[in-house]
Image 1 (spheres, rainbow, N blue to C red):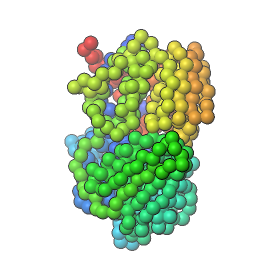
Image 2 (cartoon, rainbow, N blue to C red; image 1 turned 120 degrees about the vertical axis):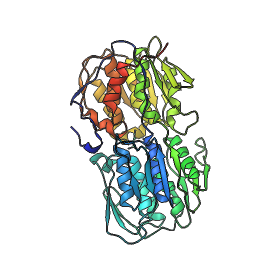
Image 3 (spheres, protein in one colour; image 1 turned 30 degrees about the vertical axis):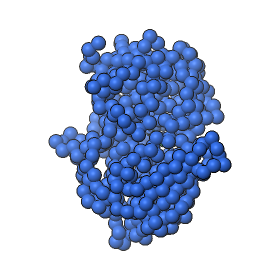
Image 4 (cartoon, rainbow, N blue to C red; image 1 turned 45 degrees about the vertical axis):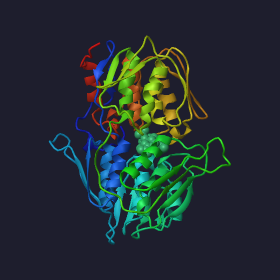
Length: 453
Ligand SMILES: O=C(O)C1=C[C@@H](OP(=O)(O)O)[C@@H](O)[C@H](O)C1
Ligand SMILES: C=C(OP(=O)(O)O)C(=O)O
């Protein structure tokens, strides 16, 4: 068992959880909860705005409740509706503690978004704020962010977690470089608070390949929607001597917003994969037509593995084909898809290569090593390469798997379990990081409702 926030677990599942096998093609409509990345950006921007913001469709999960707690510690009021109550809107009254207050503490859990998005905000308060988190969060990249913030004028004790930001009511800001090759969140964290720096910010990425590009688009779009003036220059990855990717945010007030959070397309991935693995059909309502979420790439990826994807007025429908085929793909923009695609790849009839995802070693756990090791217990043939995974078809058998406190690994094992009898999963409740009702949703998917064909 791994530590988890029991306050978010509304139903306690059995441990280890027997992953259900599918008795036939899965046919279901699955409504997935709100986007973690959208919810946590909306909360940060609302906390930094002057006035009251209202969020509909926000995700209520471990990562977003940790964000709500962090923003309260920084002086904002965040009212989270009860899980099953009539009220569904999250209401945020912006305002960071500008008067010297007693020291505050922020628990980041294993939420990269909390650990990377809130230190810059803390530098705008007049309070000492100490940051800590789960053992794995202490290992995840933060040092480049703290160094850049210090160069922008923040006073910070420590280069690794736990560390303390000594808020002095603001920072000068200005131009800074950061090596964000280990995580795009290191840049997002500097940008999201930048309207509050005296001179705003100009951030350039200098280093190896920048992962998770769509999340920087999301940061820019969400800042603009909150009234910030932002310029983004992509740079030319093919010309390392050219101008690096650079973002500029002007100083100025943010406006409060009332808006809806999109469904989390990453959370849809295991359910869509269930359609592919079983030759069935899953429909996700409210799939956005136009989105900055990297999950917009999912339909194409699943089609490359043999599925058919179709946008209908009711949502995105994915139908499995005659079999599952391997794929060779660069997932640098969409590393979160790698675990679930690995589940499909071990069920596929031909080899797969997942490339461009070296940074996954620094996610909730070392995802590359964990996938090879844990799925290897089932007999899967997975090799960790320099920048990803090589997967070859192999006969599979049941075994007990440990998600190592990683929500996406737990959901990945559930997908494999549809096709391989005897898979059990430790600590399935770790899915509460982003999909708190995962076991119940999975059971409901397997029970229908049937779709008209
Ligand atoms: O900005 C965000 O909301 C995220 C960025 C990505 O992080 P990395 O750039 O560290 O991969 C992604 O994996 C994470 O789940 C969410
Ligand atoms: C990498 C992930 O999360 P985090 O926001 O903690 O980085 C993820 O959700 O796959």
